[in-house]
Image 1 (tube, rainbow, N blue to C red):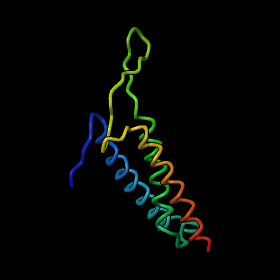
Image 2: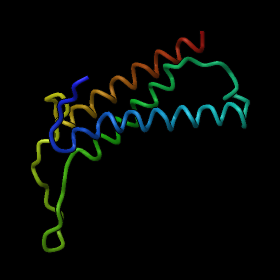
Image 3: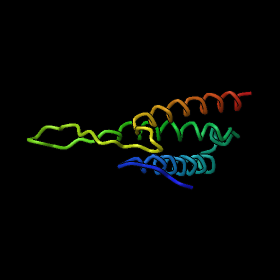
Image 4: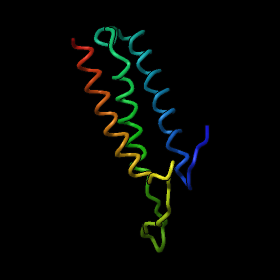
Length: 111
């Protein structure tokens, strides 16, 4: 598989994989050790929704670069892209996908 990125754009799949592994591990630990509401069977879409929401927030917050000059932060205009899409736009895409997955997972789990 070919990945096309520019500057910090390669961090986008790293953010998604890292948050998925973290949330899946946390979900398993809560299910095994705490029980209660976490012991119920729930749809994997809830985990994916939380993954995309957190990675979207992480991507959005790290999409811009600043340098300190004379004690003040100055924004530097770098093109951080992944597959020719700006890093900030990926944050919005992940947030939207996370909401869709989370809502759909909650609906499926409740039914």
